[in-house]
Image (cartoon, rainbow, N blue to C red; front, top):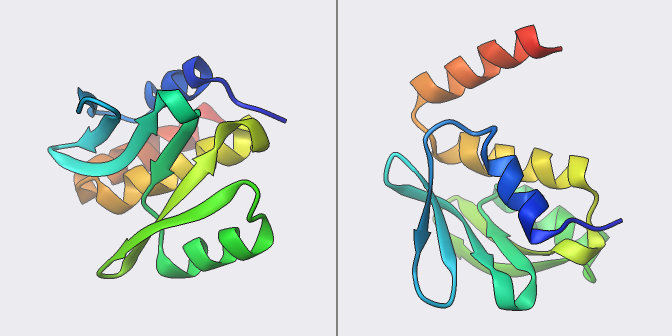
Length: 118
């Protein structure tokens, strides 16, 4: 049960218009100029946007994998330790972070396209 940094970065290819922006000690993940995540290569962790309810549930359920990063408005950001998460779960979390941030037209196009991928 582990995801490599390269494996996580490959997941980003499934999310339209994702940009990776080098910010020195981390890489910011953005869609249409708005942030939805971070990568900290040195610590093998990622930060992801989530709902407040999801943030609380994830941290309570598995504090060895998830940590509270911060809250901002209606969102609760989480830190995810890559060595403690399965790829399917991480893909679901990063996709949700992207959906919380991307414009509706992109989310609709992505979800509509996913219906045909199944």
